[in-house]
Length: 162
Image (cartoon, rainbow, N blue to C red; front, side, top):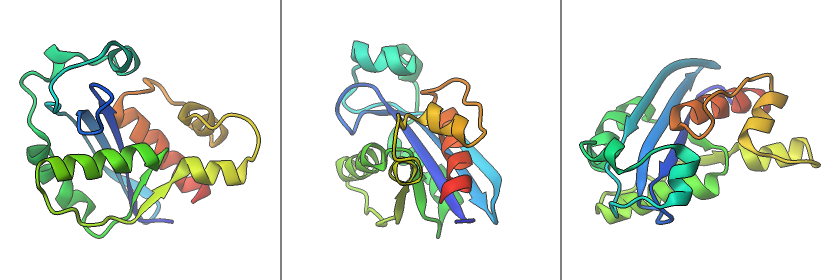
């Protein structure tokens, strides 16, 4: 696959609608050509300890952040016509669909691919965490659980195995 966009969400709590940051990397003709990152005001607007301890974000970080529809208006033109890719699409795709539903936005039914599923096919044994698979693909993931860093790692993986 040479043309796609990777996407990664972080959430404020265990509700899929509580996206609090997003990272997107656009790949065209096998090259990273654009990237995007934004904090998002989550809904519901509370943070739990587990999510904050993973992604390092808290209420003060997103108090003044835009809501999802305003952020998506900036992302959508960048990804028109591209399939989306995530490492564990079961999480990121359900977040995207949930937040579209919550804001009563029409979901464009993006084709969605998963580097986690593909990595399990390519390397049947062992762990398949994003940082481990990124390293197997020659990518040094720094700042794991930052949405843009994770989207960049996913792009590097996708370029190798999708």
